[in-house]
Length: 100
Image (cartoon, rainbow, N blue to C red):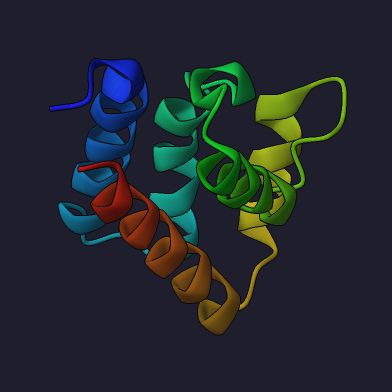
């Protein structure tokens, strides 16, 4: 197992567990999963360009380029359509699979 991405793996696993284990709407599950995703930083992927770019895309879709990351991500997820939220959830799952 790659020790370099241990934190990212743990946090994304927690996010996926949150996405999968709730009967709430996909938007609500993304809001809850965002707490785990925001525990990961772009620096966790130093030296792994492809993972860094893919992680940045997830952050971009959550619109976390603002000062208050968590609030912005929550507001963004809350206004996503089911299709947009499902697409983002799929990206999160695919990203986690690539961390394994």
